[in-house]
Amino acid sequence: MRTKPYRPKINVITLGCSKNMVDSEVLMGQLKANDFRVSHEREKNDSEIVIINTCGFIDRAKEESINTILEYASIKNEGVIDKLYVTGCLSERYKSQLEEEIPEVDAYFGTMELPSLLHKLGANYKDELLGERFFITPQHYAYLKISEGCNRTCSFCAIPLMRGKHVSKPLEVVVAEAQTLVKRGVKEIMLIAQESTYYGLDIYKERKLAQLLMSLSSIDGLGWIRLHYAYPSKFPTDILDVISEKKNICNYLDMPLQHVSNNMLRRMKRQISKEEIEDLIETIRKKIPAIGLRTTMLVGFPGETEDDVDELISFLERMQFDRVGVFTYSHEENTSAYKMRDAIPEKIKHERAARVMAAQERISIALNQEKVGKTLKVLIDRREGNYFVGRTEYDSPEVDNEVLIDASTGSLQVGEFYMVNINGAEAFDLYATPVYS
Image (tube, rainbow, N blue to C red; front, top):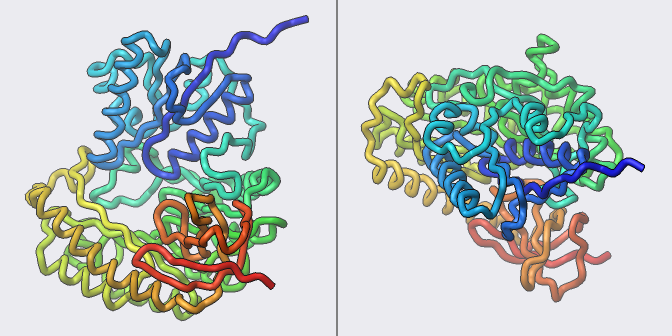
């Protein structure tokens, strides 16, 4: 009788965005299928191999990735772990420099080198594992990557340097993966990409996001479908009718705008004007009056003035976005903006970000208070202390509002949908009680 070869314990560390999270889940699923013992971000250092999936998007993310590599390099030097491997965006972008500066790492791999990483570990890449991932998220929701890379030329962005040109997954592959996830108990799927509205152009020669949404909405047992990272320029408005029509597609749209001053939009190479952005938002809200809109803004870009920031705040006050995230500009090598002088001090960048967020906090609390007295559907994510914590269709995990439900009001099941009455509101949280029929 043949015995299986010994497989060491592997601990995977994930840094960065939800797209990195999916990559780690796929990696861990492959390792599990090859009979490795796998954990994710295990606190106890009892694994023989550590794999760090890095982020290299902006300075703060790069610093976190490098510090994590150095931490585990030190642990390796102490003899606690045997092997250390690094993959992901930082490794893709700075592989040669990292090899020279942190030689304790046994090997570095880029974003598209999963088969090579598996081969290094003595594992085989299994093509048949469509959707068979090791969940980092709770079992009831999952991120689903519909494409890789980006063809946009935003002057501040290094993503094309790390992820390459846009490559869509075939529609039938995305649907099959979603079906597999639902069979495993997933109730909510978040569609993610570097640029989701470009979906299909490369392989079908036309945008296919509307058709993809239609196909996914017909999957039995899929309660919510949520769309992230929709680029505003050349926005495919045909998806609005689908979102409006299909009950299991959330009235939610994450559309990063980055700025609204035409001065900044031109310098950022966003391929859209403030006037076009305002027209698009009007169209979206006309088609879907109940839409929850999330956006992100970038402040401190070279050439930004106080007037530009005032214009941005005025725009937010008029547009009344449900959710806004704010980032400060990071001067990234090999982007077209790198040729510009990064003259705005970090202190000023952070002061501007704080001003923008303070304005949005006032908007958020006013919008949340309007929800008091309403009955909304929530998905329960977890129990935390004396509360069950859930989300409405207007909220994505980690980045948006949460609904806090006093656990003494009834026993709820994590991963299930409930109707609740909203009876309290803060800037970033709602309070509710269950509705029992």
